[in-house]
Length: 125
Image (cartoon, rainbow, N blue to C red; front, side, top):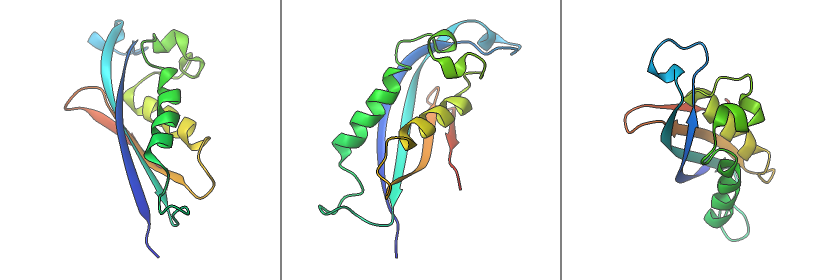
């Protein structure tokens, strides 16, 4: 049996700084992050979908609203001690989305780009 995947891309803007980093990123700065979420399922719903795109977009918007236009280090409790690197942001979004999915759907991967040329992905195999 095959596996179906669907992909949703979006973005958010926020500020952060990297603790204990030596370089420009130790200072407060912002990014316009791009986010890609890939969901998968072995079975489709009664309409023939992994999930309705509008429902995925709604879930993703709710998760990203916790980050969008915030100072991540101070405004998001998860990052009070966890360094808000792009890698850790992808873990955060992955786990938050996973909490809200139907049992038959899983998160295949979350990729977040901090610029047009640099990004990080997280998946659990």
